[in-house]
Image (cartoon, rainbow, N blue to C red):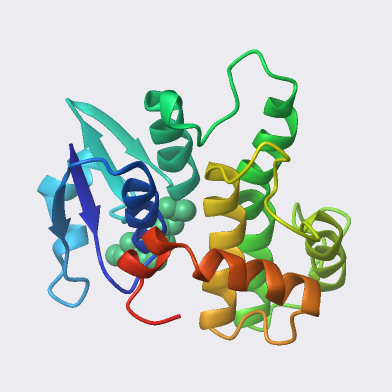
Length: 196
Ligand SMILES: N[C@@H](CCC(=O)N[C@@H](CS)C(=O)NCC(=O)O)C(=O)O
C-alpha cells in the first residue's frame, strides 16, 4: 500500500488514520515546491495532482474522507467503522461527507474573502450556518458514534483540528475545543502530527 503524502497537508489526516489502524504502508512524500504533485506520472494516478492519494494493490483512492472510509471498511474488524448493516451507518456517513462537501468550501470562501454569492445556492451555505452546524454536530462527550471512536472522528474532528491550526476556525466554543482536545490526546494523532 502506497500513501502519497506531504507533512503540511491534508495527508496528515490519512496518515493518522493509517496509524489508528496500525497498517503498514509505504509513505511517499511529495514536495509541492519541487512540483512532485504535478508530474505526468503522478497525475496519471491522481488527475488532481493532490495528496493524500492511496494506492492499495492497484486500487487508487483519492480524497481524504474516501481514503479514511476505505481503510475503515477494509479493516472493519479493527472497529473504526460501524458494521455494514448497522443503523449507525447513517450518522457515520453524515460525518464522513459533511466536512469535504460543506466545511471545506466554507473555510476556503472565508479564507479568500468570498462574500458575493448566494448562501441558498452555494452548497456550503455560509459561515454562520456552518458554525451552527459544527456546534450542533459536535459531541458533548466522547465521540461522534456512541459505540466509540471511528473514522468519522478522524474526518470530522480532523477537519476541525486542521481548520484551527490554519486559523480558519478561530473562536471555537468550549464544546468544540473540548472535542478537538480529545482528538489531540490520541496516541495515533500525536504520532502523525508534528505539533497541534
Ligand atoms: N479534496 C482533497 C484536497 C486535497 C488537497 O487539496 N491537497 C493539497 C494539500 S492540503 C495538495 O495536494 N496540494 C498540492 C497541489 O495542489 O499541487 C482531499 O480532501 O483529499
